[in-house]
Length: 533
Image (cartoon, rainbow, N blue to C red; front, side):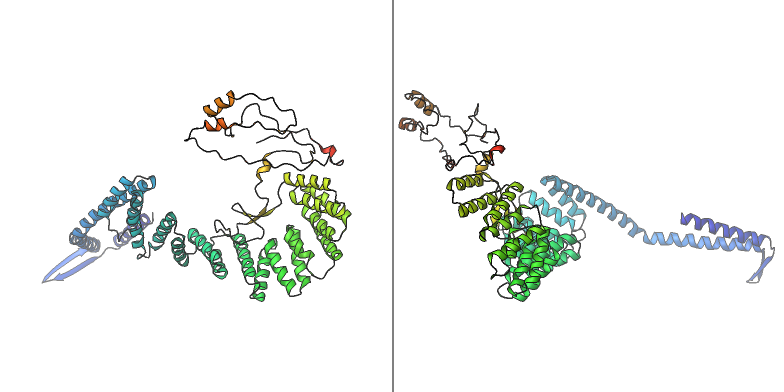
């Protein structure tokens, strides 16, 4: 568009110039070699313009003829390059689709048409073709060759990292990830692997620097970065508690500032403050964390902040925590434990029963059993509470990748992942497969299914069936009889030698003696029966 406007402006200017000359007639006289040439001014202007145009055309022709060899070679070179890039594109698509033969064919074709030093993607296509063909050694050699090229270095490190992961060589994988993270911390795979390596070795300062680099490159959000820093600082504080208490306290306080609701950070900071006799500041930290999320470790440390306190003082501190978080099962459990230590059985019983109403779980029933034993010693009621505890859901604990830990840890012992432990109820025990009402006092009767469950394994061997059928029939036991009809020795002798062994079934634990129905719980009885699976 701009060129058209410039052309039109030039034509318009030439028209104005010729019109101006036409309105002003004149003559131009030229004397050359004894001859005198006389023309009008308009003819002279046209002649000058024509001469200039002719000179420009002649110059363009001469320049075109001079550059024609380069132009022709450039045309064929561009055509060759286009064919090479087409082959490279087809090869990359084939490699992504898993067609190793086509990828190798297009790799060779692209290498003939394009120089590998001009197009680094040819090296990547060669490595991918080698992987598809199962030539992992050749692929590793190509990835190692990429390390010499600044443009391909990260790609080579990524390929070597994946190969080390495939071979299970964690040390080599973390080595390549560390080199990549030092050059480009924004790479998620490199940063995460390096972070696992640093935390596994206990290099908390190095891990903190890496998290800061991730935050500066906007690889992770601000909240996620603060959470990771809080976890790493808490781990650092735990590691330096005995060797450098001041550095440990500074790290713990910074962690608590970054994540006030993170219980391990609050516990670590308050514990270090208590050791330095700063009970007031440590208590405020625990109170703030308790308001955010009640935790038994916070309650334990808060009630025992001053070792010389009497049991009544610890009970008062527990009640203060309860005031901060009312209608909470953990608050009631804390007061119940402190009241049990203070021999205030009525308060302990009331709070334990309140905790059961809010959150029925194993620890609440066990605590109530301890209260019953300390106050009355009624073994019947104690056994009843213990039986309820067996069937109740488990208490929350620190769980990571299926591992239950008594204490919080910064990394998972299975996967090495940072901040993997979560405070939640572990997986239910096998006994929880039997669904029952927690307040049923009678011995449960297992209802026999009409047909075998699909999940159950049934031993169906003709020799055993024939032997058992030929055995003399014994009278059926009466209801309540614990006798079991044995399998005779002849039945076992009939089993062939190549029969596959079957693991013995785990015996169901006997329930404790029936202490009777609690009068307070009789109204809550349900007609539901036990069902297996």
